Image (cartoon, rainbow, N blue to C red; front, side):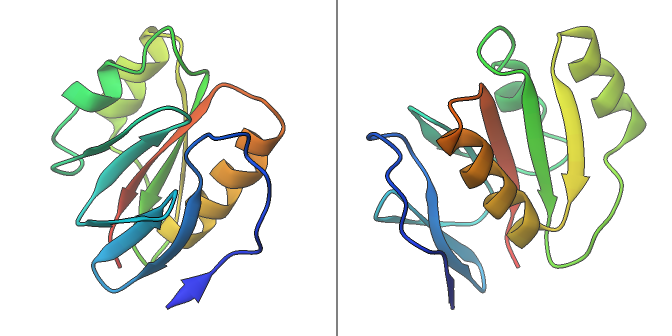
Length: 118
């Protein structure tokens, strides 16, 4: 299990750690894929499930998309859909997406991450 250095997130949801098939967010364990914002966490069914991502419109400017263990590409359709809603998508591995989300959240930015499990 990998853990991150504690930081004060002013009560917002940060990714504390992750391991095979799970994420620990703000002290709670979530199994499977998740979408994380500063004030909410919800389960996610993966890349074809755009509903929870579309719901981010107007609330976040950047979505860090964690594609599991490996770096990959977000589906073009997803990028086009979210870009049209004003959400920039940055695809990377899930550990990198979680760390980047935490750092950017601590800066007070309007961000979210969608993470596929390892």
